[in-house]
Amino acid sequence: MINQIRDIFLTRGDRQYDGEAVTQLEHALQCAYLAEQAGEKPEMIAACLFHDFGHLLEGNTPHEYRALQILGNLFQPEIIEPIRLHVEAKRYLCFVDPQYYSSLSRASQASLLTQGGIFTQKNAKKFQALPYAEAAIQLRRWDEQAKIPGLPTPDLLHFLTK
Image (cartoon, rainbow, N blue to C red; front, side, top):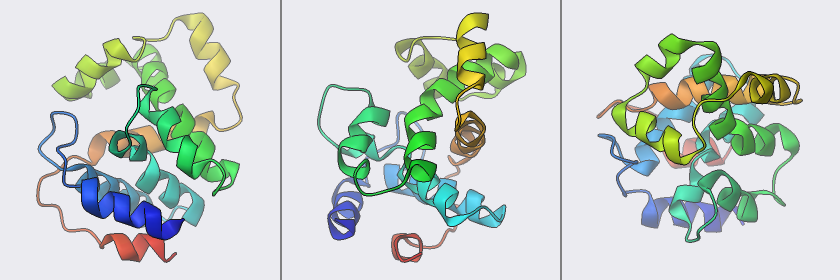
């Protein structure tokens, strides 16, 4: 299954990342690298690598759920849950930190609308109580930083063999 994931990254990862100046693969590698540089556990690094994997898959469901169709049976909750929750984490962060919304790229601000918009107080409280909310929030912060054209990172094999 890891070979299938690798092949999908290698054959579809050159797609532009949602209106940003990096590809899907560059974004995934940068996000994983940021987590690695911060000394995160391998599970969080893997969640960062795979968080937008659903963008590389065909389907009409939101990308965070599309990814789970392949990754869900392969990895433990410490990897899967931050992936599943990373879009909700964006909505949460926009509610609790107005500066966070301002810091989002235009593409990320635009996608927020299609992802349900900024949380209400009720939604935010519910999200905050979820077991992997903090991990999803941290993943989200690296997600927003992982959009730097030309940033050197380790290659895909570096992360897949950990």
